Amino acid sequence: MTVTLPSPDSPLKIGTRGSPLALAQAHETRARLMAALDLPDAAFAIVVIHTTGDDRQMINADRPLKEIGNKGLFTKEIEEAMLRGDIDIAVHSTKDMPTEQPAGLVLDTFLPREDVRDAFISAKYDSLAALPAGAVVGTSSLRRKAQLMTTRPDLNVVEFRGNVQTRLKKLEEGVADCSFLAMAGLSRLGLADKAASAIEPEEMLPAVAQGAIGIERRASDSRAAHLLAAIHDDACGTRVLCERAFLRALDGSCETPIAALSEIVGTQIHLRGEILRPDGSERLQTEGLATLDAAEELGRKLGEQLLAQAGKGFFDFR
Figure 1 (cartoon, rainbow, N blue to C red):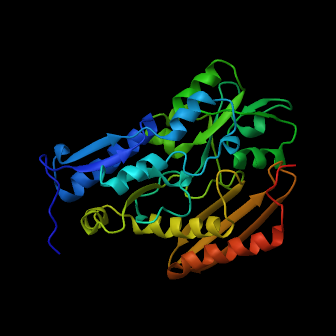
Figure 2: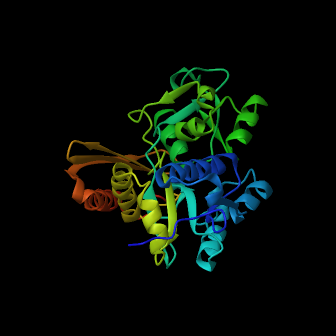
Figure 3: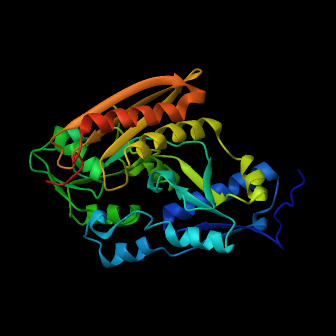
């Protein structure tokens, strides 16, 4: 297949949100494409698109995302731009993506996965275990909140939203004693030293696809598919496929406390997953092993097993 490469006169347009982390991920994608295709910087154009979620974060900064309706809040306008042809590809944090893409779009390219762990952020304490009873924990993640309430119901959890820099500033201002961020995001921003410690998955299982950058394109765009194949990481793709199948089987979103982590062991993939009641009163866990070509089936099967075990209303707020 002969493919016309991007050029300064006809650059590949890379869509992204405008947050510092989103831009860092778009720049990483461009750098990898430049290296893989031996093309100059000017052959790629980064296009910043403002999303509904960006507006609502400013207007409703203290409201939980579940009250706003978060599915697609940070992707809708970007995906519409791609369907119109205004951009060619879009770069996302895969953990924030709905499990199904709009008709005509596919999410099938993934960069090498970063650190999957959650970061414990605090100027007062070194670790989660060091927090005293009654300590104020700031987080907007229902997963993290439910996991905390399961093991530390003595903590006071408050709503805590915003980009990485906003959350760090809130901590400096004493809004909370500690918070959490993804180690991957901190690393990509050169802020890994802001973490007091990294929380191992055995203590806090991460979000589905945490640490994975996903690149979306039009399903009909064979040129973009060919170009993106040069930077796709097979191992990350297989792991994400497994974890997102688990999430899809549970009909999960940011409104449901779900965690999962897959790891490749030789020719097999191992998946750990859990679901929690939003108040942390119950946690159901599972794990399984399959061959790499059965990664998606493993995720689906374990998700369906947990869903059956949980029964109706497990994710309802009490």
